[in-house]
Length: 268
Length: 170
Image (tube, rainbow over all chains, first blue to last red; front, side, top):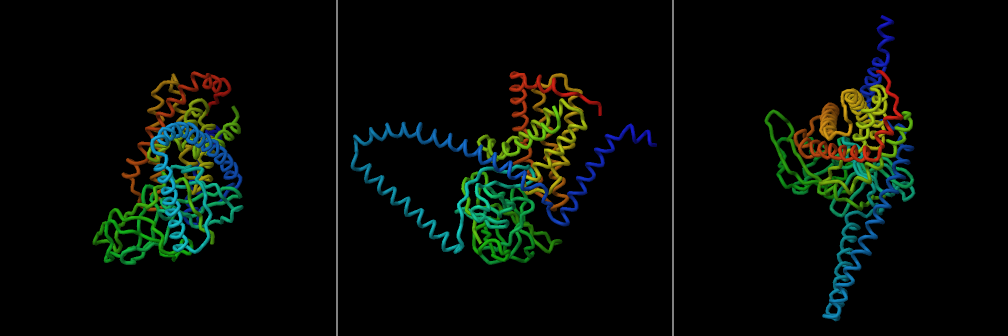
């Protein structure tokens, strides 16, 4: 027997290691996620993410501003010769229109949410295939704390999962660990929205509740994280089974996570 | 090459995966660079080393994301062993067939992760995830693997890795 173990000690060691990993995962399901070496790892990865994204954005911006603007400038010169007065008038009107739009948007946000917010650019997305997260370029230095709400002009993005001095990790609505108290905008039915990676599931909605495809889900404010009334998701599928006390409701987030470049963190 | 060097390499790869590959993403799908490198290095090292490397990489991914600590460690460890065992059978590691193996690895990992998540978080839209995320990512990862292997072969990086790697018996 000792000879058998000695011969296969490496295999036994690996099997024990995998068993420990599996056990580690199962106890986290019960007791919540362990925080282990999170700060140093995130500090290193956050530093490189900022560096890489910063470099990439500066190159992109340089190309856009100079190469593209040279072409535009040439066209502008031609246009100016043809219609100087009209172009100027148009530019001024456009500027005023854009300014008006921006002010309206800001006012709408301020009315919806009296709390102050911090604008945070996205510097990284989805590091793991089993979790939906993104990294933003703001952290404790800007007053961001764990569990703060993260939104865009379209609606809810998620909440702060972990935070460092200069960057934070945001857990998206679609992450399997994400839950959010919501209500149907049309009839105020309440439920709990859980992340399912590609979409979300609205849980604990009674069999008799009136939920329809196309219904908009908004934050209920009951979780103490998100202010009431922010758009969260749109119902895409409703299934009722007589054996179940609850309906199976599938919803898709209103925010397109693959296109996010800027977010707003609501400071409590 | 020592395991520590590989670990540092993967520590740098995690942010690369999160930020540099964003411009390469198609409809939100990005190739898995860390899996590609685990596969390539796994082909060249012993199963035990590959298991450690896989577990280490997976744990880094778990720590850097919001997932349960150990899930990716478990799956990446298994994939590391599989890559190392495959490395003993593969005659030409620059062959494009590695792209297919890599796609299969990515697919297997996706399915294994879905199994774990369903076990811990309840039902998931597996078919939808498979069609919209796991399969496209597997294909994309396989393609990136072929390109990277070709690049590493032309720049003699693979030869360098082979020379520095001492094959140990499991």
